[in-house]
Image (tube, rainbow over all chains, first blue to last red; front, top):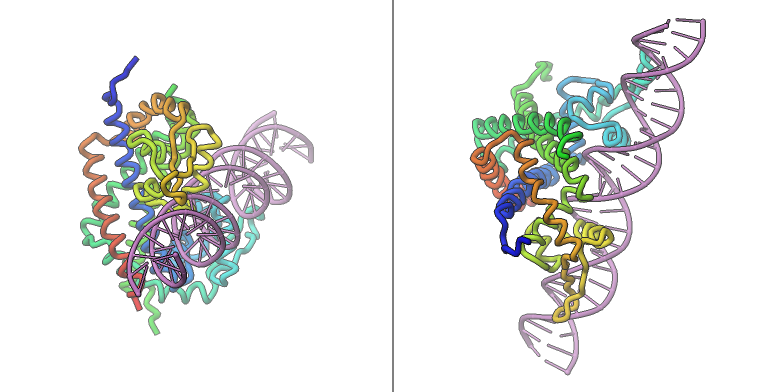
Length: 160
Length: 160
DNA sequence: CACGATTGAGTTGTACACAACTGAATTACT
DNA sequence: AGTAATTCAGTTGTGTACAACTCAATCGTG
């Protein structure tokens, strides 16, 4: 059947290409700008995220880092090892719970914060957005993430 | 000096953590939902993007695929090879330009489109957004991407 | 026609991201 | 107390991303 060149569903495929491509592209573009700006600091974008959390909240177990950044140990373990190799953090087995590993900032890691302070402004200016627009976009994205996370759990078994 | 616990710049670092984390998380959440839905089709999210372009536009050289998806040959070459290994596409050296490789859909690759038609609706429902909201977000993201791309080129030499 | 520059695909090396797994430590339950 | 279930970090394997590079084919210019 269906020799029609463009079934009605084709419009949906086109739309899907557009939206998922837009998000994918935006994420990679963001990543690219951070890559350029963070090169001076010797950090990658995910490494910068980890450092931001540590600067804000101090030493944390790997587990807590993973919860805040939604990264699992498979991603975080080697990443933190690279930060350690760079001399920015130290890893220490917790005394109370031998399973847990706390990530500590070194002096060098703490000092790097001073140089990182200019990063956000450079990013903001790169987006061309003002504070309100950034806030609005962020709210939208968080809403989207929440919906997608909820759906991911449901979809796992559904769809058949 | 500066024993003050939170310099004014700290607010910017916090904001930066929020916005870049939001985008990062949204992108990964989107990826996660696609991963679940595309598992039935045996495709990853980037592979699905390639198939969408091929379904829409027919056979294309690797170069054209890369331009549309903003992926370079380092990413695309192995990806297309995996699609070929899965029997969905064929690669053929172009006759006119021996440097160029055209990616052709196989019968199996073309047939897969039928099964992919339900993907967009499942994604849409997972987002919890309606058509207008998706369109608005997409416009915002494209605007952001354009600004970031322009800035990336400028920032390369600037910032010093 | 010749030759240097450019182009298209592919390779190499590094760094995420994540599923699936391992192993050790801790907790829960009986 | 003693064992099963859980938790935390780490490892392994696959698949992107992307910079930097190679190599062959093609183009541009003299």
